[in-house]
Length: 113
Ligand SMILES: [Zn+2]
View 1 (cartoon, rainbow, N blue to C red):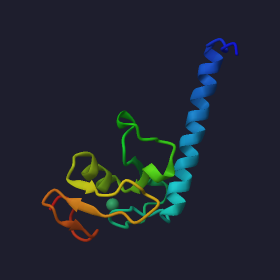
View 2: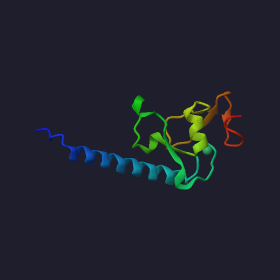
View 3: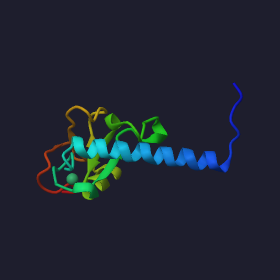
């Protein structure tokens, strides 16, 4: 098979497709979680962040709802700076969170306490 020429139009088209895929994943994730933060259960509507449990740099897919979880801004920040750890890798099942102190995060109280 002859490879297609790599034109600017092809690149734009691939970028568009990736965005559509990501938007679709985001929609699936937010609906699955009832538009609530998976860590603290705060209702965030469409303002919630969608976090990749396994980052792209480690082979995780940003388009796979199993790898993505809805988090409020505050919990997302806590996960990003490792104040909060997601213990499982499959977001389609139950997830548990552990604080930096090794305690189970129940969603009550402060993340950075
Ligand atoms: Zn939260």
